[in-house]
Image 1 (cartoon, rainbow, N blue to C red):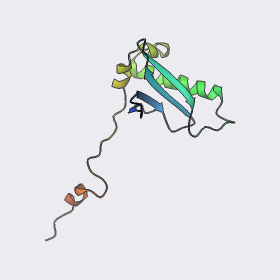
Image 2: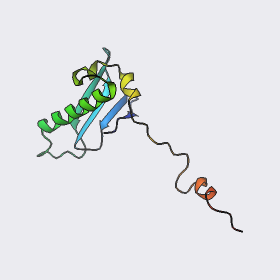
Image 3: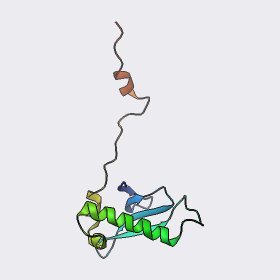
Image 4: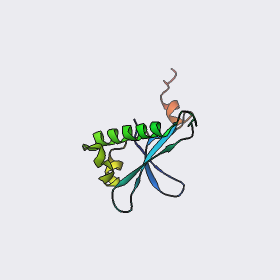
Length: 112
């Protein structure tokens, strides 16, 4: 499961655990301190198979993974500061060039 930090169009920062799936889960910063896990039907949700039981199961799986990464129990995950969740996010690759960029040309062997 990938944990990725993304900024919404409104400028809010979220840590997504499942994003393009039948159940979308993400953490947000709680104004009272700590963080809050949200679990809701996603873009690919089917109204017959995406039940509240399935949403709750995905929520528990995300809490288990976050607890493993934070080194705590699942019921203590939302007590951690949002910055702690940001630190355990997976790094995403950053590409400096496109597929047709200058890098592809520099890897070619010179013609003799």
